[in-house]
Structure formats: structure tokens, C-alpha cells
Amino acid sequence: FTLPVYTHITSVFLHWYVTSPLKLRWCSSKKAKAAALSFLPILTWLPSYPVKQYLFSDVVSGLSTGVVQLPQGLAYAMLAAVPPVYGLYSSFYPVLLYTFFGTSRHISVGTFAVISLMIGSVAVREAPDSMFTILPANGSNMSAVLDVEARDARRVQVAVVLTTLVGIIQFVLGLLRFGFVAIYLTEPLVRGFTTAASVHVVISQLKYLLGVKTQRFSGPLSAIYVSWNSPILLPFFFLVWFCCLFGNGKKFNYLNERFKKKLPIPIPGEIIVVIVSTSVSYGMSLADDYHVDVVGKIPTGLLPPTAPEFSLLPSLVTDSFAVAIVGFSMGISLAKTFALKHSYSVDGNQELIALGLCNFISSFFQTFAITCSMSRSLVQESTGGKTQIAGLLGSLMVLLVVVAIGFVFQPLPQTALAAIIMVNLLGMFKQFRDIPTLWRNSKIELAIWLVAFVASVLLGLDYGLLAAIAFAILTVIYRTQSPESAILGHVPGTGLYCDVDEYEEAAEYEGIKIFHYNSSIYFANSDLYVNALKEKVTCHTILQSRRRCVRSMSMNLLPQCMLGGFPTHLPCVNCNHVCHLSQ
Image (tube, rainbow, N blue to C red; front, side, top):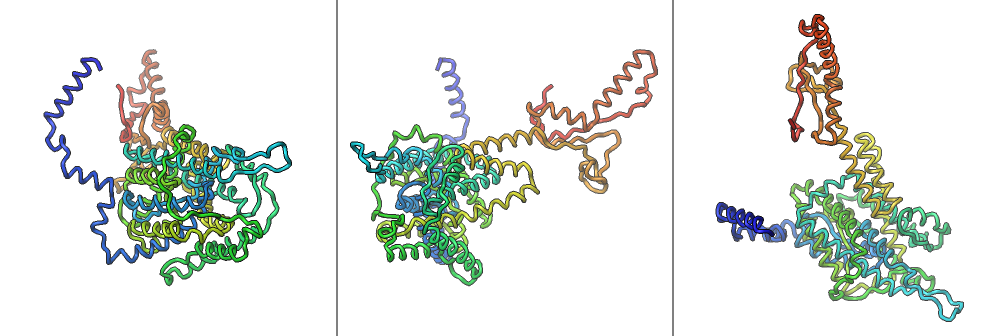
């Protein structure tokens, strides 16, 4: 700094220090308490937790959610391209942390299909099979061998580093009060994007659902390439998949809806499918005798904390932003939905901080990025969950499996997990019903939905999200540049002023034009505003008439305008949206 600048800063600080009240200069105990309560919301609700009224409901809800969280953790790890046990880790640590830092009482954080798929695509890109293929020595006729353990270890490193970056981004955005960015991820954009992600999930699960080998592609048009090159033959696994899908998706959903009022908790269809599939696989020795792909080894116990492989950071920065934004948008939208339903409030900035801490701290324990799951959140809310205690109890069930009985699920066929994933996508595919609704309500919102869907399917989830956000911003510019304008008239007997072209009852005042422009006026639409004003008020006609009057006066003709030949018009402009007037 130069001396004048330094002197100015010093004088400003001294002036503030002398003139400001003492309570603004020092950190009081009241301020410290408020900051602690804001950073740790558990300190707000736990001391006043009504044990008699809430505990039983939270226990029932926690057990129900944990039963669903267990198979989903195993299944979504497949989407993330990591061994299934890492899905269990991701279903325990983040839920435990969210209990302390989260503000929503009903969302169930943990693994989620869309986020897992985004992580899996990055992991496969950074650690493809070709990097770990061992070629035969001395030109022998033996086929190349894939080092699966080395490949999986590398993909775990990629997923962990990506999760660390996601946590840092979300935490920093929360500290900077960037929770408002969720408003730019409109509901049509998010729903179109998640529907496209469901298409990618289905395509990625073809090899598990049908028992076929599919060639992997990455980048734009990868979904089309995979679908085009997939074999058509359906082996034995198709029957297993069909039974799991039909039994889980149809029967259990129907029974839960049919006997909703009589059943204390929903029938856990997913865990039933897991138990039955594991029993059949173990009893028939499907892995050994029929070479069926199963979950495989699940280590017992928790892993010690390990620092991520930070050398991978530069290549994952762009992907981490996409995962962070999608994860936060899914979490805050569902949190606000439940908060509105149950009459409490959630803090978007604190939710960013909570998700950031969940991802960052958990990444040191070998987890991948998480957000809230709609299916689990609905289970937690519908079974009577009252607070975050329900999610905590559900995570303890996952912990029990990890430290004690994880080996029981080693014979579980991967086909069953793929069927569980498919069933949980049924709700997302129902979002196609948005199209006729948006067509009736808003063509622009429909365009956002379609662009988000088509771009994400064709270009991939990362580029598709960027394209959808860019298009949504363009629609905002279009709306500000092309707002509605109208001449308003008074409706007799009321205080209302309506568009005279749409309401026959609305009548204009004689000699007065009331012009309404439904947008703020700024440089991008100023010319459009002037044109709309001239068109509606017919100012150009008046000016032309007066020019003719002046021309007539200059020619010593009778000035008709002076004799009342031209009516006087007084335009009245509604300036509620005007931010600045220049002279």
C-alpha cells in the first residue's frame, strides 16, 4: 500500500472503532452461542427432545430406513464403480455427521443413484480397464488378464479424492452464503436432468441385468454407443432379474399401498429380495458352479482414516463442481419440501455446510460423495420419523453389518442389486409425466426440461448439466427482454386495472393512457421498452400528427392542432420496475 491509501484505511477504521457501539466491536457470549447454534443445529433441538413423544417413532423410522439403506448402499456402489463395501461406508459416516450439522429432520442422506453414477463415470475415465490389463509374456497364446484388485483400488482413490473436492466446494460455498444458487437450478431443470441420469443408470446396468458384456464408452453420445453395441442374447440372469424386478417393484409396492393404514411399517421389499437372492445363490453355489457375478468379499470392520491421493486433484476439479451442485440441489429441494409439509424451516447455507462436512470428513474413511435419497426420505417420513435421530439409528444398522455380519452378503448376486437399482428408478421415470403438465402451464419451463434431458442423455451428465444451466440463464434473459406489456383500463366498481385487450369491462380514462411493462428496465431491453411504449400508446401517431401541424403553421395554414383537431393524450407509465432514470 502507498501511504495515502494506508492512511485512509486507518482513518476509516479508527472512525468506525470510535463511533460504533461497544457491543459491535467485541465478541460477546451471546454472539458466540448464536454462532455455535447456527453451526451445530443439534444443540438447538436435542436438549428439548421430547423422549416420550418422539423416541418410539424415531426408532421405528430408523429401523425401516436402515433396512432400505443397506441394500441401496451395496447397489449404488456398483454405480460408483467401487466394491460394494464402500457403499456401506458411505451409508454410515455421512449419516452420522449429518445428525450434528443438518437442519432437515426428514431427509435421509447417503448414497444416491445420480451422484453415484457421476462418480462412477469419472472413476472409469480415470482408471479404465486398459490401464490394468496384463499382457502375456513371450508372445504366448494366453489371453490378457485384468488386474481387478489394482483397478478397483485406483477407482476407490479417484472416488475418494473427488468426494474430498466436493466437500471442500460445498463447505466453502456455505461459508460464503451461496445457498441462494439453488434458485437457479429450477425444478424443471433438476427433474429433466435426473430423468436423463436414470437413462444412463439403466444403460450402465445392462451387463448386470442381462448378464452380458457391454463395451464401455465415455464422453458425448456414450449412451447411444453403449446401447448400439450391446448384445441381444438374454442368458439365465434375465430370469433372475425379472423375478426380482417384478416381485420387488409390483407386489411389495402394491401391498404397501393397499395396507398402508394397517401395516406399522412398510414391507421391506428390497431386503427381502436381498435375503432370498443371497440364500438361493449360497444354496445353489451359483458363483462356483455357474460363474454368476456376486458381491464377493466384504471386509469385516471399519477402515482406519487415510489421506486422499491429492495428486489426482487437478484432473477432478471440473467434475467435482458438477457433483457438488447436483448433490446440493437434490438435498435442498427435498429438504424444503418436507420442511413446508411439517411447518419448520431449513437453512440453505447450513445445508451446504452440512453436506460439505459430511463429504469432506467421510472421504478420509474411504467413502464416496452423498446426498439425500428420495425413496429413503419418503420411507423415513412416512414411517413417523420426527428428527435426525431416525437417520442416526438407520446408520447404526449399517454399522452392525459392517463390523459383524457383512460376510453374510458375500454370495449376493449382482443381478439382484441391479434390479434394486432399477426399481428405485421407477419414480424418476414417472417424471416424464411432467411434459404434458408443463406444456399446458409454461412452454419455457417445458423447453428447460427437454433441453436438460436431451443434453444430459446425448452429451453426458457433466456437459449436459452445463448446457441445461446455460439454457436456463438464456431463458431468464429472454423473459426480461420480452416481457408482457399492456394498456390498462379501470374495471368499474372496483380498484382493479386490467388489460383492455383481454377484459371487455376495463375502460380507459379519456385522454390518459396507463402503460404497464412487466419487467425492470435496463440496457438489454431499453429499446424494446421504447418500442412497446410507442406501439401501445400510439405515440408515433401523435408525433406525426403534430409534425404535420408544425409544417402547416410554417406554411401559414390554419393550425388544426391549436383548434382541438388532435386530441391531447397523457401517457401514464407504471414505474414500479424502473431501477434508474437517466436525464
